[in-house]
Image (cartoon, rainbow, N blue to C red):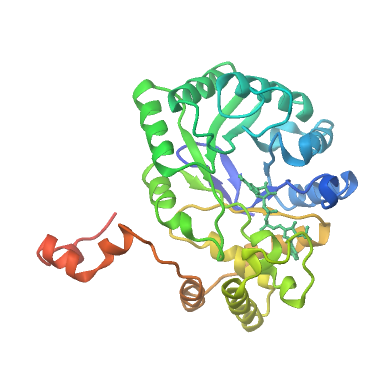
Length: 339
Ligand SMILES: NC(=O)c1ccc[n+]([C@@H]2O[C@H](COP(=O)([O-])OP(=O)(O)OC[C@H]3O[C@@H](n4cnc5c(N)ncnc54)[C@H](OP(=O)(O)O)[C@@H]3O)[C@@H](O)[C@H]2O)c1
């Protein structure tokens, strides 16, 4: 296992993050407590230290299982990331959203479930389109100053909101978001339009969620075993299937599993990227850990990029047009080394 610095910080995290959304058997799928313990034990034994959870995962069960696992072990070894924003009490209008009241309440309850007195990385889970971003940043900074949280990060939020938040935080001397969590995989490349360039600009690490598209990119659903993915999902449509078939073909050429190819594609990007990979069985985690030793050649990367290409839309595609560059920059544009 190699370690990377998370965003513009000195925090060292393993190159694969363990997603724990499937810890708990609520909603008819997921790992039991015993299976979750086995998965975390194997992950830690392989050098993994970065765990991703949320207040909402399995209605708090994921955090509770992690708390029970970490409590008798070495809490300090783990870089524990959790999230706030999503509803965990249906009778209280302030028990959801990005507002300060919910942030404080949610963090207090997460700490209890996790049996710890600090969170290493607190993510805003999803943008609510209601709360002013200065309220969010000021609240998060207070949590950092009082020692309940070490670093802050953000997930599922428009690029302009994150950019405004980090710029404001820099001006005010507040903590800035160091990681950006978005759905990113060979089946979901739209973050390349605005979110990823924004993250690069601010030195944030991308933490792709669902890097295996919920299991679709392992190729197992091509065989008709739908598991937790519902029939009719975009992850199983014609386009998704042709991408998955290319992943399977490359895996066969390399003598590895499709999951290794799909996961490694998210890790070999020209920006810092630490995928959050889920597992509901020990065997899946053991398989996914082998990705670390797999290397995709430039030719494999190109084939994967081509089969999964998306239009960037405006203005991305407009900027790429040769005529636009020639007319506006007098032929110099292509001679300049880009940052
Ligand atoms: N910020 C957000 O909004 C957000 C949203 C979703 C997830 N997340 C985070 O991202 C993590 C990962 O997301 P995810 O679980 O949806 O997606 P994922 O990592 O793409 O898929 C994980 C699923 O793929 C299957 N799988 C994994 N390894 C496998 C292997 N080697 N062979 C066969 N099947 C395998 C399992 O499905 P089965 O259980 O069906 O066997 C597993 O539950 C979550 O745990 C969570 O921490 C964040």
